[in-house]
Image 1 (tube, rainbow, N blue to C red):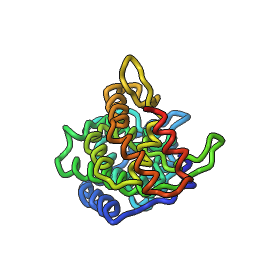
Image 2 (image 1 turned 120 degrees about the vertical axis):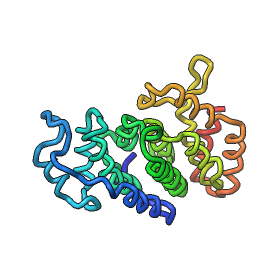
Image 3 (image 1 turned 180 degrees about the vertical axis):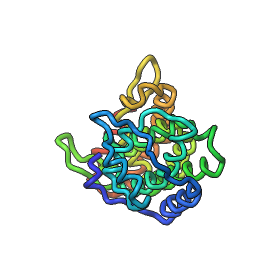
Image 4 (image 1 turned 135 degrees about the vertical axis):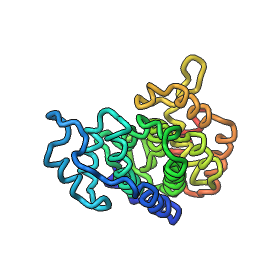
Length: 259
C-alpha cells in the first residue's frame, strides 16, 4: 500500500485499544543494551541508542522500522521484555497507518509470531492484542477511497495486507474474519470483493495467493474459502444498490469474476 496517501481512521474503539496496550505493557521497562542485529544492513549503534533514549510514544516510524528490520531471533529473557516495551508503539503506528516495517505492514509484527504470544503470554496481554486487531479492521472497513490504476479504480486501503499481518503474527484469524462477517455493508462487501481478486484454485482448493503466506497454507486456504462463500457473493451483489455509486463497479465486478 502507498501509506503516505492513506488517511488514518482512528475510531474511539481503536484509540481505546491502543491506550489499553500502553497500560497493559507498562510494566516492561526498556533496559540497555538493546538486542538487535548490527550487521552492515541492519541497525547502527547510533540508531540503537536513539531508540532506547527516545520516549516510547515519540519513537518515529523510521527508527521503529530499523528495529523491525534488525529484529532477528527471539528469547524470553532479554528480547521479549524489550519487544513488549515497544509493542504499544508498534500498535499506535499501525493504527496511524504508519506501519513500522521496511517490507510493509504484512511483516511488521512477525515477532509476535516468533513469540507465540497466544499460548505463552498473559491472558490480558493476548486480549489487548486481539482487541487491537479487531478495532483496526473495523475502523478501516470505512476506508473506501479509490485510486486510479491502469486497470481501473481500486481501493486505496488493501485489507488483505492486514489479514496477512494477523496470520504472520499468529493472531486469531477466525476472530478477525468474524469482524468482517458482522460488519455492515456496503463497506465490508466492497473490501471482500477487492480481496477476492487474489483467490486462486490450486489442487482443488480455493487459496489466497500471497508470497507472504507461503509458509501458512492452511490459513491461505481458510481466507480463500471464506472469501468465496455464497453469502459473500450475495453481499457483493447487494452492495452496488447500497452504494449507488458507479465508481465502485470495477471493484465489485472484480470480486464477482472470481465465482
